[in-house]
Image 1 (cartoon, rainbow, N blue to C red):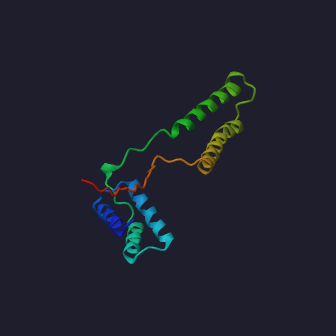
Image 2 (cartoon, rainbow, N blue to C red):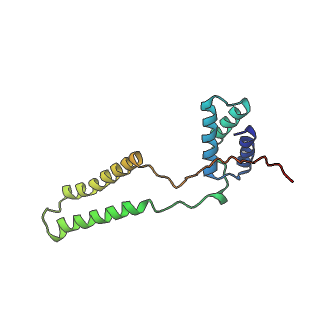
Image 3 (tube, rainbow, N blue to C red):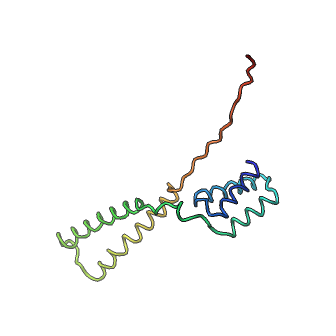
Amino acid sequence: MHEDYFLENAEKWRKGELTEIELRQLRAELDAVEARGALTPALRSLRDELASGGTRSSKRHRSPPSRRGCVMEVLLLGIYAAIVWFIFIKMKWLPWTTATQVIVVIIPVVALTALVLALNVVAPSSADVRVIKYVINIVPQVRGA
């Protein structure tokens, strides 16, 4: 990408017209240019400014946080609560003492934490996805009337 692309987006960032996703993408593109060793002094100062300046994106461009990620955790906790109720209250297979109550509370906390961490490693996901498709225009050289 040409240096002007980065400078134009930096100006949008200073005005607060870039979304959080666009800002992350701009930073990633600058990092890619730096990895290739093609970072000019102007782009280097821009990269430093973006890194130290935090996020200045306008709130009107931000989407509200999604609550879809919590559905699985709530569903698993509901199933776990039903199993605990069945074993301890309904069937009375185990005594409902202070020790079992503490264990019943600790198990889902540890299990859900392990599940979330494992899923972030094995199958990471994000609501902030941006697909970029580079397009090359092909213009035929046709001579004629």
